[in-house]
Image (cartoon, rainbow, N blue to C red; front, side, top):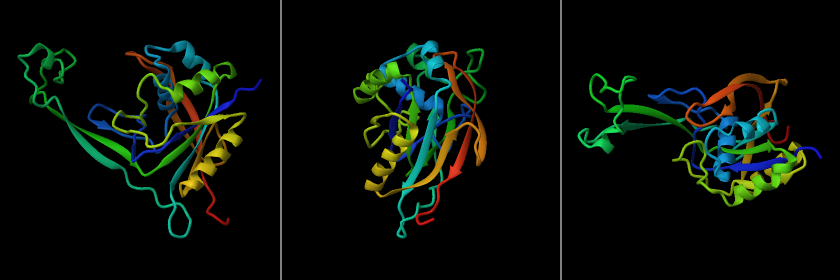
Length: 240
C-alpha cells in the first residue's frame, strides 16, 4: 500500500513560520516549513522530546502546499499583505531578587547580567490573511493515528507560534495521493472565496528553487535539521 496524504488546512489571521531567525529578530518564511508542520503533528500526538525515530520516518516523505489569498472583485487572488511587524519587551518588570523571576531575565552566555540591563526589545514578523493547504505524506501504518490525533489533539495546535491561533479545523481528511488532497483543498477554498496564489512542491521543478534548512532530525533542547530543496510555482490566473 502506498503512503497516503493528510490534508491540513492552515487558516488564521496571523501565521509565522520561522526558518532563519535570531533572538532579537524573529522572521517568517512566506509559507509553512516542514519542521513547523511536523512540529504541529507532534503537538497533536503529545509527542515531546527528541522524536528522532518518528522524524526519520517522515523526513523524506513528500510535502506540497498551496497558498490561498482572499478573492478580489475580479475573482483573482488579492495581493499578499505585507508582513506585520510586532515587538516584545523581554525581561521587563522582573525582580532579580526573586529566584523565580530572575530566571526570566535575559542573561549573557556566562549567566551574568548583560551590559545595559536585562530588558531587551525583540522584533517579530507575521504573515497576514494567507491560508495554506498542506498535503503531507505519512507512513500508511500511521495515517489513522495521525488523523485521530489532529482531530483530538493532546496539546494546543497553532500556526507556527503560540500567538497564531487557527480559525478553521486543521484536519481535512486522508487521501491516496497529493493530487486528490489538493483537489479537495481547492473545493474548500472555493467555498471560502479564496484563490490559489502559488504552489510549493518538494524537490526541484520548473520554477523558483529554494534551499531550506527545515527538515528536522531531532527536536528537544538540541534541535538538528538538514536541507531540503523546494520549488515555488505561481498559479495561473482565472481563465488562463
